[in-house]
Image 1 (cartoon, rainbow, N blue to C red):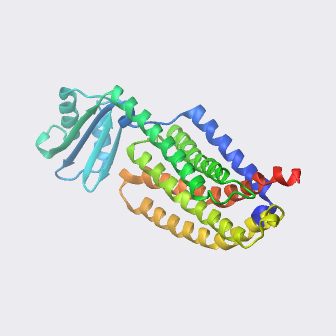
Image 2 (spheres, rainbow, N blue to C red; image 1 turned 30 degrees about the horizontal axis):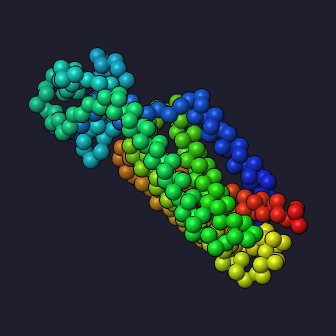
Image 3 (cartoon, rainbow, N blue to C red; image 1 turned 90 degrees about the horizontal axis):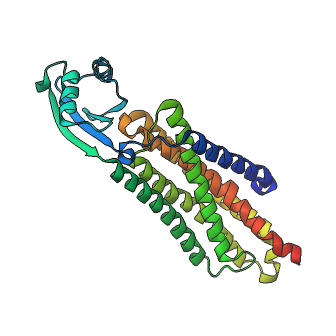
Length: 300
């Protein structure tokens, strides 16, 4: 299998992408939405329906604070710093150009910075818990596979692959947040959890093929034939994995292009994560299995 033949190249690419993602996170940091930093959300409808451009023009005349504005099914969602009730009324007057009766407020919420920090902490803990739990489950599921690679190593490799997927998505959004102003909101966390679930599915398919093919080889020959077994398993899973990834990406691209801007970040995160998940499952997890077999080979 060409993946194992050039595994040093593929693993080096993964390492470079990981370092680039970490660097992006360190330099640019994530551009958190008000769910995590605190602020106000104003959801409203206009009659007649206004264009985004018109609302931006009316707000920019007086309202100089930074804000984001999205439209979903005829409803505008404005996120900005914490607004008082008086400031909210002023914003409505600006949007309506002095005719507040044309504005129907659907929702007005304010989130304090303390609650936002708590959400960030809980989101991070949720991600860590999911990654560790998945790794432990894989180690348990492969508990009968002790030779030539122990079951806990399957779990460790799974964790490394999942961390790679998360870092790539976070690093990309850190850069896009710096260059294009993309925000990390609660939907982004949902996207990360979906990415973890998708990626682990691909990885399990490859690992399960390895487990099934190991049974056909006598225990005393598994060390020497392990690379060949992994290569055969990759051949069996490769086309299925690529086809599944391409069809998933096609659907996600359609969602990104056709749906309202309110879920663009969500679909973009999924596009990035699904792509990195396919790479980590085929070009990272499987080659790492063969490296985990090396020490015992050398001892023999």
